[in-house]
Image (cartoon, rainbow, N blue to C red; front, side, top):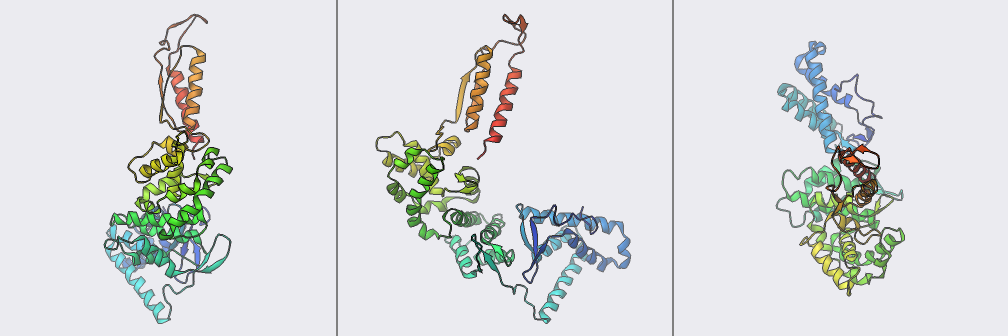
Length: 423
């Protein structure tokens, strides 16, 4: 529960969350202030005697928890939340709980405060936003460029999407001194929140995520229209960088990289839905010290090159494989997507082994299972040859414990290896 007295300290639970005030300043996010505002709304209805009401205290605490939870769900990774968004959630919580009179008092309070600000000549969003670039340079937010980016993401979907609304929601969460990548994240979150309204926002969110990925990998924002040329320029350097970092097989550097770079089709980036692209980014794209180095079409070409390593005309075959992968006509299994073209080019999805009926065979099987699990292989063991529980063991004159203890070792080993080997 969150009340004025027992709200967690801002520098603990909510250290990653900030509140954007109407003048653009950024302050700590404090649930206690939400409780205070709601308490005032309840007292406006119940009168001063409500200050001692246990029911009101409990209801305020319960509703504050609901508001905070709703805000956290919208920004699970943290970030800045505009004061208007917080107040909107308070209104919504009061209405949903059936406290209609209290909600009305709260709305009237907001309207009165807005009227007073207007009389003082204060605009709700009249503040300057400076964006901090990766090199530390500060520059004014280019709202026109941000609007153009969002409109580009909505291209072809205008009938079902509202670029102006996405822009409005994005600007709500920006503040002076915001990092450049946070601007992109704000646009992504604004579009993602609208997916439930229309499926077309799924594609819009994916396209905005693409822009963020390009910024990380290319070091600058590049439009979809310019990517055909940029892919061809970027691809040879990407392969060389991956080889130098010992992520990619040295044989990939022997391909005609210029030819393969020209074969990349940038427009296929727009085929992704948001969840699919986010999954590729989180789990599949190669990275160096946490920074991704693969763009989507380069990823598919890298896999295709790994599959074509031993082909006679390997460039032609790589392009052929790339075309079926990148158009989603065919999709390789996860181990292939993880490992093709890398220094450990394990391509199979599943492995079947037979366990011999002796300690060497049993523990060799456990070792093989661990090594295969490390590189994303599924396992199947045939334990039929291993003697049954209670069977006589000639060497020790004892009785066999059966396969159950060993199966637990195999399972625990596979789990440990997979947890330690995540990309």
